[in-house]
Image 1 (tube, helix red, strand yellow):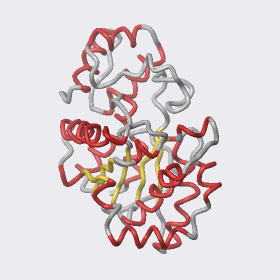
Image 2 (cartoon, rainbow, N blue to C red):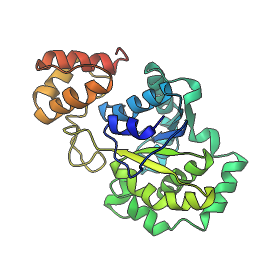
Image 3 (cartoon, helix red, strand yellow):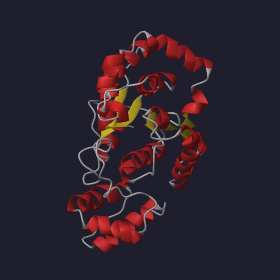
Image 4 (tube, helix red, strand yellow):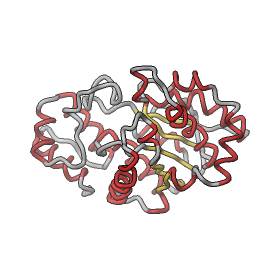
Length: 270
């Protein structure tokens, strides 16, 4: 069982040469807003990895949405977290596949790791490597919360004793800097895989753009999806040639049909 074959199938980017055997594979997400189609590469990959016998950890960083410039207000954390949990379950993930930051960050083992790592995590470099990830990056007015946002992503890898970490291209820098530190403590290799932003969703990067017109969320009706596909050829091509095949669905030259197929996926019917 070579995990690299699965990575290539879904268009992931990695420098690993081969990973054999059953592995612990992790994807973390902060519940900052509506789930949209740029999440699909990760969800589809994890679904197939689970079928192949790997242990998957779909991690919801319920504190991270608040830490990242209060994209999620503190009083909204529980509601948004529940929305993410329910959505992932609609796509076939189970309780055993999902974990929360609030489940582990107060445990003695995690706190011990926090203290262990504290003298090895370079603040300035970590924040620099989190380019295009943090809301406060635009002003450079970082807070302690920003440091927690980045540092915990590295400590999570050690806590779960991971083999493979999935992330977005914008967060890959965090792991490029942080994984060697984790490897020092674990005395073994940890790989990370990132997926490029789904072309045409938003430009230039999800966290740097105020234009969300093409961000198709799971709440949208078929008419709205068709409107966005019709108004953006690059988005249509990405959905038709990239998103649909991930779910074992053939594309179509008929945009109305593609909109229907994507609507079905968004509603857990695929």
